[in-house]
Length: 95
Image (cartoon, rainbow, N blue to C red; front, top):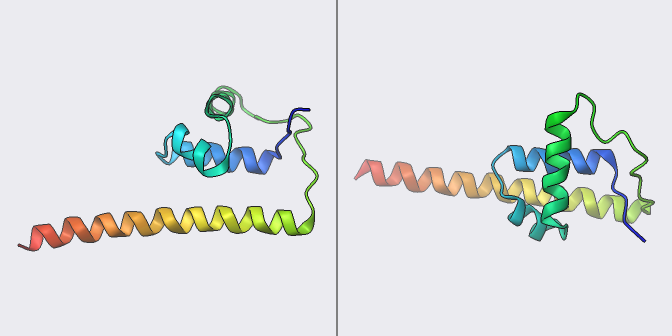
């Protein structure tokens, strides 16, 4: 049986792609098929209102919290990596 994903989750994945992350990396991070998330991006870019179907997956409150915490962790790691790169760039320019 095919999995169905909530609209908010799809939009979060699309926003990660729009922020510059590769489809390959996002697919590895979230255990998704790369071609599926590229399709989500195409659908989002081509439609005024995307993901209007019944893409709801039933999650327990614990599963929802885990998904939210994983998303926050990924965001925090991305911010950390950006800051590391910035520090590296600025420390090189000081020399």
